[in-house]
Image 1 (tube, one colour):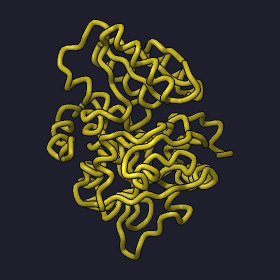
Image 2 (tube, rainbow, N blue to C red):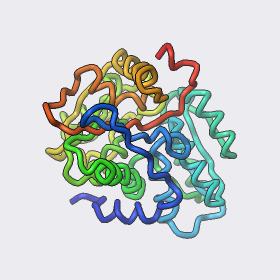
Image 3 (cartoon, rainbow, N blue to C red):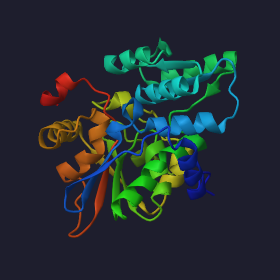
Length: 305
């Protein structure tokens, strides 16, 4: 039985209204739409789940909130905490980009950079939360977080009048799971880097399993294992898994900037990479939305990918 429902997503939409932005949808060619979560507060969709998780908890402990993140989730939690007047403590791995660390500092978060990958930071954050009693805001594997991310799917369907297919990147799977629930009827193409096949390997094994973490999108899509909530949702027949290589992601990021002047990080280009590289081929007349999920990048690198 699904632990997050469409009604949960509707409730999240009401809860975060006026706090998270209703980001625009751009029709870039007939029947092809970009959902610009690049324009969201803190630079990614993550703020939706952060607000919903914190607001669902009621009164917060004096120690505030705590999160582990590759960067984007931490930025979102720090932003939400600042807006709600709460303390935020964020753990990030060494792979986190300097742009994201600088953003965390600017938001006033207490930052600990530790470990080589996300799972190392998550272990340290869990230990610290047990010591302080702070509210844990998980990057992807909490019902409230998934419901918050599901508001992306709600908005896509409302803003486009309904699409047939939504392409969305997968790391831990919280966004893809939320969009699957929130979009109700659309087919979901879950796109992930070949170097971090969390969903692909989970579907093959019949359960979430550890995967290696490598490649250009590792700082944002670097979960070592798909979340349990995501697996429950993404096992649906409405969902298909597509893998894309780093070269395709780099090319897609460059193309988004050169053709559309949309600045994204590599994770933000991953869903589009499936379309631009031919990993996913839309049928004639198919209406397709692509979630551009994150923009926390160094603009100086856009011209070179």
